[in-house]
Image 1 (tube, helix red, strand yellow):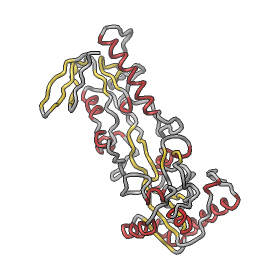
Image 2 (spheres, one colour):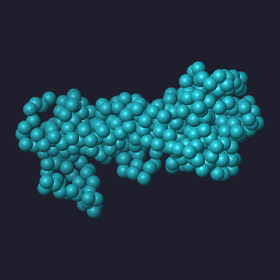
Image 3 (cartoon, helix red, strand yellow):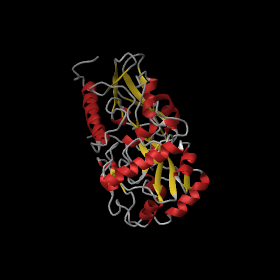
Image 4 (tube, helix red, strand yellow):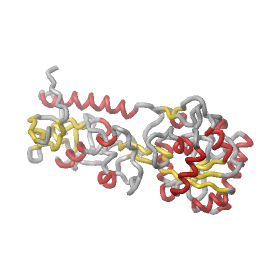
Length: 354
């Protein structure tokens, strides 16, 4: 195809004629800048989930200290494409959605490790710091849960369980043992919660983390309530109500799958403080249906295009877990649309401009 690929090369700036069309890109390789003359540029740089300043600026749900999902690829999500678009006058969405993942227990990279797996267990009870349940606990590891956590007081939640559930999970006798389940049971990837081999050493891990202040063990729900800052009577009423749902086999509030309804009656009781974490950002640069980048007057910047999660408008505040690969699908098709229109623009075959 005659395409040259430049490896180990970073784009730094897009050059644009004064309030006009794109005419080049300044790139850096081996510490030296050079100019690539071009009539069109497609920004497909991914999100900006590892850039705290951009998160503060464009993501209202973000707060200082919010955990960020540091998967091996994540350090490259610095928002370079969005910064380059800003420099040429592109319009940026006022409120960029974050792909929140929850519940997240701090200090671990992967959700199937011991304490995160326990916190996400579908048989646990999740409450806010008022002692109230707020969601179906079988929805672990999803953006739906992450967004629900963000809406709770102080953006925090607590995963509660008793010693019987702890033992069952530790020894691999949990109801969800033996196979990975889909995230939230509603699509997406898979996360092993309570694998068949169990979680050896779980009791010791809980005890160790109690010293750090992120878990609590107590002989009664009063002790748990005091630790999370809730009214003991409210928390006990919530647990009693939940236990009654377990007995009748139907969760009247959140319709939790009955196979995960296990009463919590065997002390000691445990609580784990959890949060939502940043998985990725979903949007930013405003574009039209041709994936052309728009300026602040929502007029096309000639020759400038964006594709993938750096382009705004595909996702709302909750990433669609019901359609696995929806971010990938948008990336593939927005890239195709951007490529086709960039080629038409360069060849002078574009039908219309705005």
